[in-house]
Image (cartoon, one colour):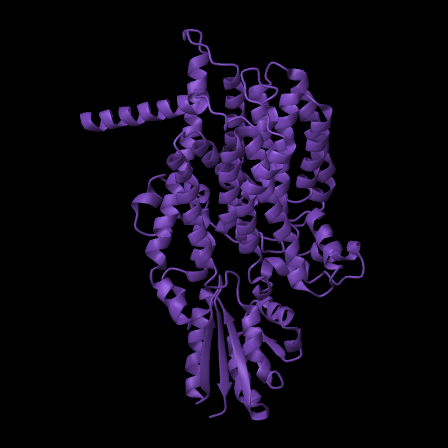
Length: 581
């Protein structure tokens, strides 16, 4: 017990030392170049505009190229899956109003700002899903540049570069920047909103508040969970502007007016019933590190925050490994053989890095508070309160919306516990890593955070290129099309698979037949083979295992030959090509 107490005391001492260093050590890279001239203690001359532009281009070259490549690679092979289908299926409506009205029945939880932009964007190249996807890709790539700009302004070049690199390499962010949903745009708007809020708080200009209000209005009309971002912003302002009630009141009145604009839309929502899921638990922060599998993070708040970077890869591959069911090329098979242990190691490294960065930033605030107590004789420098306020903004950005989502899931709607609903908080986590890296004087230590964390995230993103993350409906269509003049049967009790196969491969629509039960498919298969050379049956997901078993046994009893093909993805597709005996 004594040894344990001594170890805890040692950890606490290191935490305090890091916190003091984070706030009080002089470093020209910490304060943004924008504010050097306004800082009384700064003695360095700002660089010339040409040199400053060269610095920005140099810093952004790697994050932007990496981010654009990861988000744009193989974009044409992305199938339209269920979430995408809700809006993509209505892009050919004659008017924007008709498009928004038609999709609302199924897309009821979404507000229309992004989908209005998507409709207008799609009109520039009608019928091209590849073109439509580029809208999110551009938003996601612009967010990388915006985060660099914000990080540079608040904490210096190295912090901005580190944060932008992690955002560019994040598999979690890459996945949503390739979809047809508003998450990439919300990410960009959230970064810009915080940027203008901090600028307004520090420079006292009305233009900053007006721009911040417009961005928050766009956020409100982009996703219904964005008010959680306002929770973090409001708490931060309450902390730093508690002696200026007029400014707090001005900001609060603006946000209330913005929220009032959304009330008519929310009142007209007719929600569909959610699936029954258990309420999330908080979880043990050490469990994902100590346990030897990835399943320890299921439905945990702590895991949701720190291990989201490998979530969609795990969905695509599965536990036990789903890729054993599908034939893959030799190189992919070789790498996938090492996937589980290496992915777990990379996810643990990301968890430790993120948690360490948060603790260092929290230690900085603790150190600042201790130094400002009256009993402390050494008063902080003039720059220290500004630095502490900025670190507090980053922590409020990340922690409070996350806690708000957890409280909403526990107290109101368990199905709301979805990380993508607060995807806009992850830039704050990357900024924490940037702040921590920027405080080291030694170049090797500065490189540790971006190289270690960025390397882990790039590796996870590279693994995600091996298998389709979304269901491979396009691949299914390519397999079925040679027999399209025959009879294609979709054996599914869910209407969605029938719709998605037809939408992704329009030339199949005339051949698709849907049955309400597997019995109906099995009864029709012998009749279909009398008039066609082949017939197909399609199943989706692990939940179809019992149906597939029934189908295989029945075809064997009827002496009908079946060749099964498995197309991997979040929901594996199981295709059966049946031929006459």
